Image (cartoon, rainbow, N blue to C red; front, side):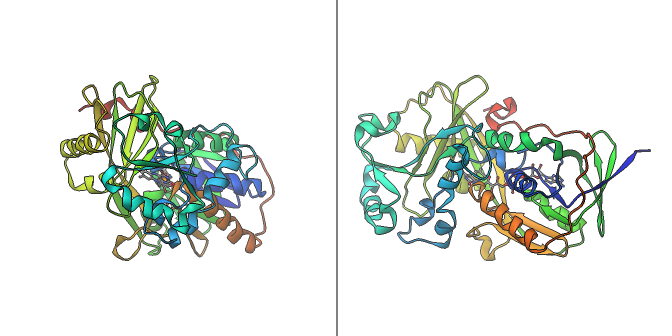
Length: 397
Ligand SMILES: Cc1cc2nc3c(=O)[nH]c(=O)nc-3n(C[C@H](O)[C@H](O)[C@H](O)COP(=O)(O)OP(=O)(O)OC[C@H]3O[C@@H](n4cnc5c(N)ncnc54)[C@H](O)[C@@H]3O)c2cc1C
């Protein structure tokens, strides 16, 4: 028989990715008694796979006019930078800023299209073309014939952000067993990883479980909202790479042909992480075909790169979002409430802060009668997820 402990809280958040953690930290700052339940490890869903780019909308403005998507993210670089500099809503001074800027480059045969785009009024305020001595090292090579621009978009190590947010609020985070949530009106029963169970009395429950939201909604007896999954097959490579690179290569479409971000693995070796159209189209390819395609893309786009010593891996992962007609990408984050249940998907890691502000505003507006402050039990805490390039089993090819 397992012991059961009753816990009285204002808010229970389910899911410890960027969305749930940012929301937890902000609710606690605002004086709510909030807890977060995580079934696997903090950051274990999409968050650890994120490229970490804090988009300012440039990528979405490649059509030459500001779209709803690009406007929604325009303020995000400044918001995140303020947090990183210790002057924002949350303290991200301990997070790792991998690059101050993300870059955008074109190969010579695509130059005219790109320069036309950057000459447009829309983008002039946000970008600058770089002189040769200001370019990232990779693009100072004599073989580089295109143009390169710096975008005002910082790139963060996603798991360092998870740690920076979670550590100060760790006492409010509980490691639970996957699939072990029972819901009955105002009560949520969960089994912790040590087999102790907890019965939460709550005023509000917030689902930030990414792809897990669908099962949770079903368990809570809700048919809405519906979720969509948009799959990607990312590629990573390592083996003597000299430079950390953070750049989109512009192709013939609105989506970057390839998006490269970089990090270091546990041995300190540089790893490149490839997304963009390569990862969208890669879903239809086998792993071996996807690696071949990545090799061909890099050979064409960065012909001076010696690929002979590279080790390659693919990585299949779904983006989980609110359902849109035709599985289109939502323009911005999503939060809706049915009864006491809020369901949220940030759509982008960059948008988690504004999504959390919206949740806070919705809860503030209800003027909940808050529970009296009392100590939470000492319960098992989840581990942090591992970054994909530090999982040895992925590097089998
Ligand atoms: C390959 C890739 C690259 C990306 N790059 C970028 C980028 O560069 N910039 C950007 O802004 N965005 C990027 N994104 C999008 C971004 O990663 C996601 O929007 C964001 O991480 C979603 O966060 P989340 O907290 O909603 O979900 P998740 O990170 O998926 O977190 C959900 C959490 O809930 C937990 N969970 C699930 N079910 C349960 C349950 N029943 N009980 C308890 N816990 C549960 C999971 O274990 C997980 O920890 C990228 C996404 C992908 C896939």
